[in-house]
Image (cartoon, rainbow, N blue to C red; front, side):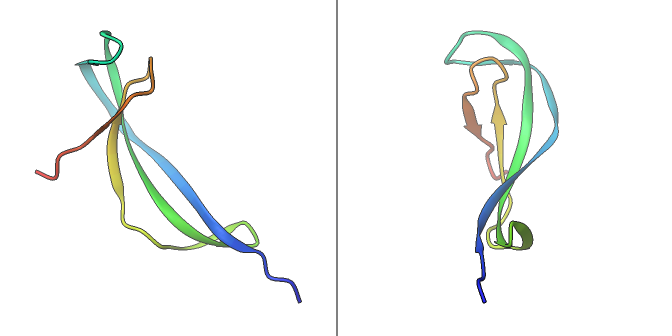
Length: 71
């Protein structure tokens, strides 16, 4: 019997923040508020999460990622 298992990172878009300035590309735009979680997979099907939710902000132009403070 062959078991195929592994991990998969699933992303979720939580909305947009308006008029944020990116220090990398010097553009002002609506940023994506995103979260991701790592899942254990069995035969490519996510079974259960193996990490907590991690949130971040992403510039849609240059794809620079900024951590969200815990506050």
